[in-house]
Image 1 (cartoon, rainbow, N blue to C red):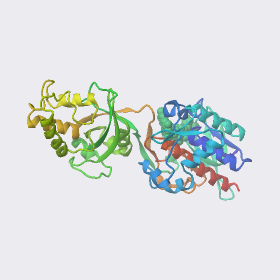
Image 2: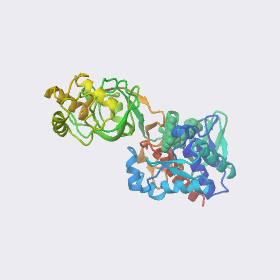
Image 3: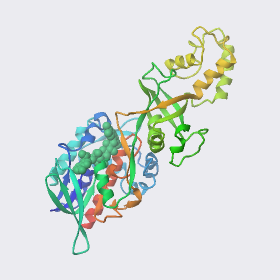
Length: 428
Ligand SMILES: Cc1cc2nc3c(=O)[nH]c(=O)nc-3n(C[C@H](O)[C@H](O)[C@H](O)COP(=O)(O)OP(=O)(O)OC[C@H]3O[C@@H](n4cnc5c(N)ncnc54)[C@H](O)[C@@H]3O)c2cc1C
């Protein structure tokens, strides 16, 4: 018999258990982890460096990074935000540093620092960490005082507890258990992935990175399947747009501009089976007409020079070469020789480059799942289930996910902290 059982020994599970134990040291608390190790994702996170949170300390700005959860997280972030996370680690001797893009890492640049902190805290606070304990059943046991107790079954044992925290991440088996207990689930789809694309405009130049604007257009073949509410339709105007650094890879496109689209478009891109058209503006400061104006001046000034060697605009040299070639301009063509048609083609390739996306690939640094427990069924003041009193949630098990940058862990820390305070209050 435990007072509290936390199911899942990941980021959210440890953060919740530690905060409950800090607030109520006399409680008997256990973490049940199915694997032989705990904190597996923390270990590999941020390329082994663990991007703990993001240096965005205003809740109203912070929520803008959550395609799912933007509205619901505003209140929780007012209670516990990224600054509180920084303080938590600082109080335990771990300083976080801010990188130029706002991501925050331990100064050790090692995720092991975070793992050691959690394991040390759990030991200090007397939290039982039970590994090889995959939970296969959760049942509520009505008590005489109208409260509920919980019976938690693992392959080895049966446990009872007064409060249960579900912090199992994106685990389909637990979602199924919760569904059987009466919760609604938003179906899971991948988020944070890169786009596969084979097009001569980007082939043979992996590693090239530049600022760009990207628009996604519906694929007509899949139009009838798309049920997600879209901004526009008929394949004419963009259904999603984003901007930022775009990275050309061996297999297609990556970088923040693409990852943002993969997160905000997680559901609709899934419905289109990851086959759609994008339009890239490699020169966000120009549109087609503006660039044609610039080209007509360059045609006069650089008349005797070859187009290929005279890069007229600020794009990486290797990309310029590819786009010039894709515009049917030969290596020897001079600015004076090229036709209006060729110039228009080049201006289109630079400002409205159309690429066919055919599938997705995993983004190695970080990937998450969109979907989970329906947010309408959670009380965000306590992270308690509205359907099953006495059950709390934290982390990725709920239908919240964010773009890359440390925001996914912040969701785990905030939910874990608030659930812990609510549970501590229940044991007053
Ligand atoms: C490669 C990679 C890198 C990432 N890097 C970052 C990053 O740098 N910054 C960031 O913010 N986010 C990052 N993320 C996302 C982040 O890791 C997750 O959002 C976060 O781990 C979610 O925490 P969680 O505790 O909810 O779930 P998890 O970390 O997935 O933990 C859930 C735990 O529950 C256990 N469990 C599942 N089912 C059961 C069961 N039936 N019984 C018992 N235990 C069970 C699992 O084994 C696991 O240990 C990364 C993700 C990946 C995959």
